[in-house]
Image 1 (tube, rainbow, N blue to C red):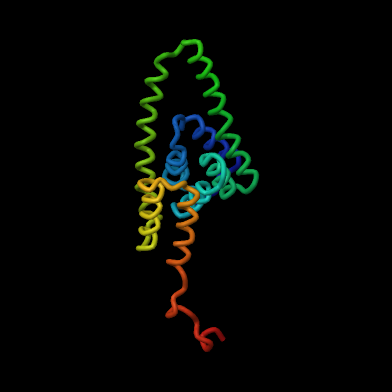
Image 2: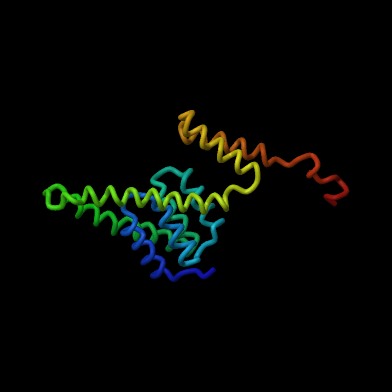
Length: 186
């Protein structure tokens, strides 16, 4: 794995910020940083994605900070966040001004098409992450439990995550057969 320069990291995150209109930025991050540039391994990306999902605030900005920090430290985190938000924000501001004046009514059709493309990207990223994140029965149980808690049961996400953390700790607790005997610990 090669780590990028600060300038290259900023350029890549700015491109992701501009190219990922319509959501699904985690899919763009995964495709760019793991698949194409190979700056991160799947496991590293999945760890940062999990942290960004449970932290308060927008997930994409949390993920940008986590990935930027992993790649280039605190300066990388700051550059990644600014590069991700600023160009896309300016582009959205310009688009909003055009829509307000009625200059670009076709923009609604363009955004609908982009939304469908984003769903496809999210499905691809989900498939790739499933291969890494669902190792063993415990991972499958926790993923299924979270799916049913947030989906059909409609529990708030923070409650489902807190419950899965407790369940994950319990399912991964040391077994009596794994405990060290006094002779082994010496």
